[in-house]
Length: 406
Image (cartoon, rainbow, N blue to C red; front, side, top):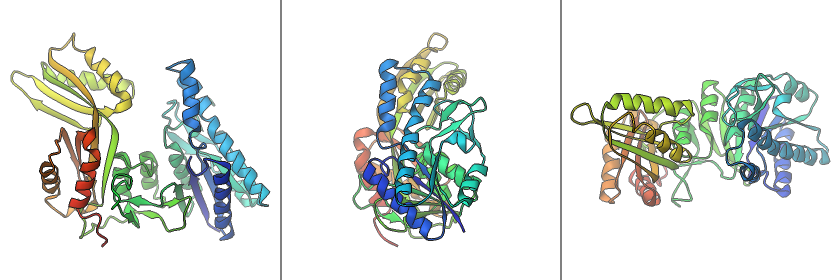
């Protein structure tokens, strides 16, 4: 009897009617002969509501107390789903993270999973119960409640599936799989039957919101099969596989976009290397991650430096950069939080030359300016104006023929 872990996001459990539908989906899997562990997010909008309550009291609430507050959302959804299953005559038990021994570090609001104790869940499964677990949350070594950040329930599900050696971890969401691009931006987007883990990791980290990037990384590291499915329609969804065969027809598998970008630029910086090292060290201390980066040399040890951070970190990054102006001579320091990152991703880039040339030619022909560029083995990213987001995605999607079925 195989163990299947199913994760249901906030929209999937956003109302009592939808919770009833999730119960039916779980029962269907149970009746196929599987043991089922369901991992749930809070009901749609609940985490935002709780965050707003905290911010009304204090714009910068205590991270520990914020985690205590936010973790309550999942307690509601798992209890309601258990009630719905029991009403239907199926034995179910809801469990919080500390009850299954989901241990994290103590980075409140951004905790990372260290270990999952599978004993309680295995015991419940052996007794014939459907196990319903709160996603998004954990406990540190001191017993404090922690949360894993936005999308953290995906990572919870993968970690639990790994601990239980599940047959598959199924991520149920409001879309029916992974697409060649965001269907809301381009109606010609196609659902992909499968995506490699490497491609999915790049897609998730570059703006595809179907899966949290940490969950994909965790699954890849532990060889846990993933599948993205719809909570609202039947279908096979998209399988995240370990195969990395290049698509001979399409060197690019997907075009993604990340809206939450902001760019900081410092020009004519004296002692530029020291400035860069000092700035990035200060950003690291406050957990601000630098994404795209370019540096050019000027005369007499001066540099021009431009980089991107998450838009939520924009103002704090500017303050930190400005705090260094007394120690370093900087001709100009400016920022732009009206930019987006567009990425072309595909394993086929390994065996196809000219992808970068085609990408830049397409953007140039359509008069889309590029501010920054970054490249990896299977990904090319460009930073463009926010107003060019939709057109850039659609032009590139068509350029690489992603609207054409193999």
